[in-house]
Length: 158
Length: 263
Image (tube, rainbow over all chains, first blue to last red; front, side):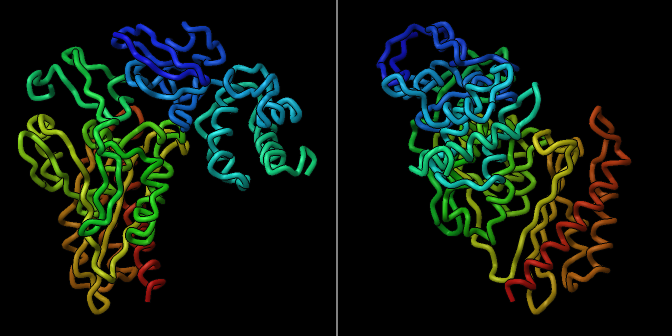
């Protein structure tokens, strides 16, 4: 079947298989920032924004994305500049092997779009669907706090 | 299309279960996310459209006000944020997993469902769950929660190895009061590992009594005996009986605290 959707601002018409996952479609189309970790909705590495909300793209039928707006980690930069959340992950060293990072960034972007000034508890809860198997979560949490401060216009050290 | 194709067609909300547990006989999925069934309305209590995601319910001020916010308290912890942005209340009830945290809560809140199967009708959630094979042919339109009596409260408790893991056992208790005594009670326990069910014997033990330590202890001990406890890879039946006792006593104590808070 054929679906039309917007991926990172570009409107595309694509052929999909009936049972195909959105994560597989996106990777097939070259959006390799969408990682397949567990393929069962547990790890969050495949998170994308679907109509503005972060979801496990491995749990979404590609056909269900017909008419939807999808943003992958590749779609977050603007005019060659990384998104403040991406910058903050780099600055805080919130990246270990990098496999969970796109999903973490997507969850953080969803959070900050609704709650520009989250508490640490709110950040922890917002990232609770994204598993990091390298080390832990402290630096990612700090990165989200840093991004929140930067996005409020206070600069990275505010 | 659902009517024409019978069991070969299945309605989906977020589609999570259809993805994770595909049924071989299902060849057509009908996505309800564009069907206008995403809403939380204050109609004789609360009406929650079947395709409303858990996130949408949690963010709804109406749902937040319902019975001291117990819906939010439970639903904001269901699965993960990424899944709550996708999963719907109708999907959860259609799948009716025995480990669901949502079902014992809705049983305690005396939920009813609007179901469409050529005509729209209303039936209690208990009835829907009792005859799922038949009822699943109908399409869940919305979930109805009654306006609770003024002096009433509800509490929920789940036991799991981690916050994200499905519960080894969960329970929800609702009690309404009249002149300091229990006028009605609904106690539901799930993950026994059978599908959540109400415990009439426990409910009856509370009626007409003040919700003091004695009544709580008796009801909790009864709950431990009354559940359909079995062993599975998560826990033994004996452990589940202890959890039901502890869970019901915690819920009932919290109900009593909440009622004192409203006085």
